[in-house]
Image (cartoon, rainbow, N blue to C red):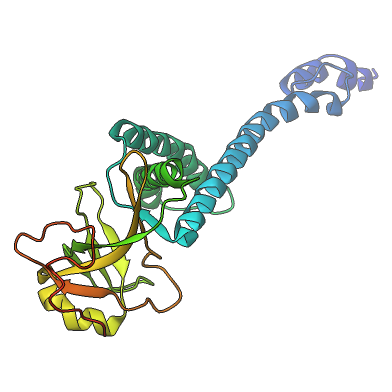
Length: 256
């Protein structure tokens, strides 16, 4: 009795074909497209997520570079609703960035590191969104302004030692903007003043917009060049704000 036909066309042969997921007599290659199509869907989603992450990261990087090289700072409060909305947008955009970071197939990481990234990356992007709000407000107020700069003196509220690339700086917040403004100074001047920094006012060049917003000339604390010495004067009683460098505070000018 010849059983070769049963091995390929009947009996155990049929059951074997069914178990292999293909009909009897069909080439094995016929079942490949279905599995390939299903595998491509997550890859497509990851590609779209990666592209979105690159776009968002690029925009944030450009805004940070613009802020570093702008040479100005806004020292008056901005719209609180706009500020919080930009922070929320930054936080929301940080969530897919965090997911993209922890799902890199070629860079495995531990569970603890993944949790830290998921928790803190959205917070960092939310902070970046707040900084973007300040820059947009500055552009809105002074983007086409031709107002002249004039000297003004403000009390120093805090002295900050430079570290991790930061310059030594004095901080001011004369209008309770909610975020103090750092003004970089040379290290020698900082070392001479910082023990009694609260007794002094720092003179800056400022200008006002039509709405009353105030912008000062400020290179920031991450400048590569050595800051120019600041004009420091002992503050009068109460450390009130002055719009004129020749105020009663100008009893003694300190340049080191």
